[in-house]
Length: 218
Image (cartoon, rainbow, N blue to C red; front, top):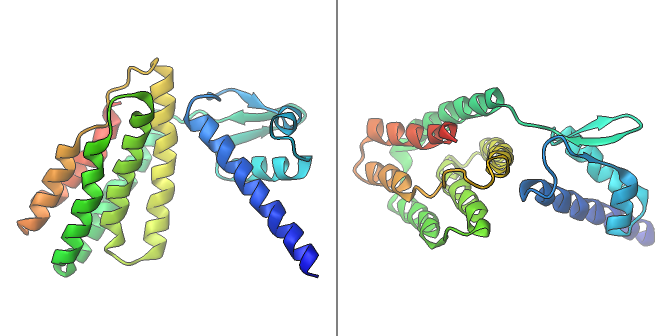
């Protein structure tokens, strides 16, 4: 019984590792929108059986990262500008709405937590690896802010939206031969946090909206 359980656990772990590596290859530009992945090449690449490869590919299809093309392979899906704008509109409604909802319950400890998260933005440079690190730090700030609502479902939904925008950012970055404008705008987060400290809700919401909407400039 334990052997079966261990084998099953190992298979799940292997699928998760392959899923993570494939997603990283898409985000870092090894695979571009329109590229087609096939099981045979991936089996050779990872040195594993077909099962975890197929499971990882199916999960990426379910997440709308890939599109299955019968008897051909799995195509990396191109993200459209309309999709990006819809996600940004959703984020503005979600994040600004929850900021207003939790406004009266934000504590001094919460502000210090946000400050520590925000400080990470200042440590990224301008090289290629840091470009994507900046996006992670940006995500961490917004996830830290919404975590003050103490609502796991809301945090999970925003996490999913941020992962989608990470892929969109990556697509734009590689398609523009790495000439995309940097996301290094820590002053936006400074302004948000300053407005919260000053207990200025309208200003905090406006700065938050501007920070989210800035993605549409890319």
